[in-house]
Amino acid sequence: MSVQTAVKRATAPDIRARKRGEPIVMLTSYHAHTAGLVDRFCDVILVGDSLGNVMHGFETTVPVTLEMMILQGRAVMRGSKQALVVVDMPFGSYEASKEQAFHSAARIMKETHCGAVKLEGGKRMAETVAFLTQRGIPVMGHIGLTPQSINTLGSFRAQGREEANWAPIEEDARAIADAGAFAMVVEAVAEPLARKITESIDVPTIGIGASAACDGQVLVLEDMLGLSPWTPKFVKRYGNLGPAIQAAIEAYAAEVRSRAFPGPEHVYGMAKPKASPKG
Ligand code: KIV
Figure 1 (cartoon, rainbow, N blue to C red):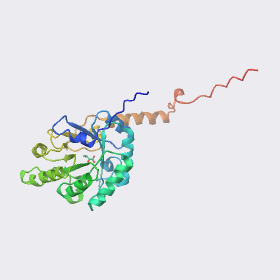
Figure 2 (figure 1 turned 120 degrees about the vertical axis):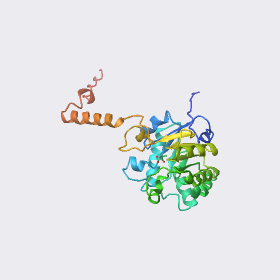
Figure 3 (figure 1 turned 180 degrees about the vertical axis):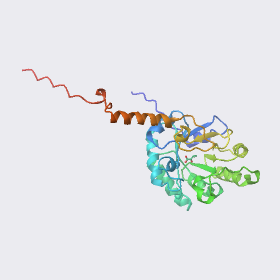
Figure 4 (figure 1 turned 90 degrees about the vertical axis):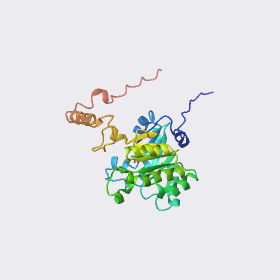
């Protein structure tokens, strides 16, 4: 009999159960290779539509398509074993109706085998969140600053910095929680408001530019590794890989030009001649 220790992947209910428990660690990944690195240390891997900025050089996430999300979602699933993989629903794939959202989310789940989807919006998306969760699709919400709405917002500005503006953001959080989301990202929301929301709802909050009181935190991997040309105030750089990568590429280019690479140890010699059969 063979003994196998199967690694159990985290599920949306596992993350849901972490409210007021050990903080939830979440990072983005868009590739099999980085997914393997992130998987060892994180509870949740987000295949964020920030891949539009990071991988494709778009100024906003608006041009990202369902096909892009599915392709990278599949790569991340192949590269990871234990974290819950959440795939972002891109702009235009879910806002028209709850039926449109179901078809897009079902494609993401079937074609990537991920464990959940994420969509942006508060009260206006509550009916859709309920429709999806009642039909077997775990949904992570995303409130506060919602980058897909950049063209109506006008700029990427922190939300709720004046108490007079708190009520609609609190209503958004409650609506998404009541609709059945298993967790929600709270992005760029003034710290006291993010704290208040976290304390007042029963669904885990995952902060980005929000509050240390949130039930978890998320960052874009390339931002925290120092690979992004510009990072917002709320990003802490845990590494500065840009210069190290540049130095390695510079050394490679110099060695190719001087024929120092490949060395004898990097090329194949001839096979040894086979001994002729006896007789
Ligand atoms: O797309 C993304 O990476 C995100 C995070 C910033 C939460 O939505």
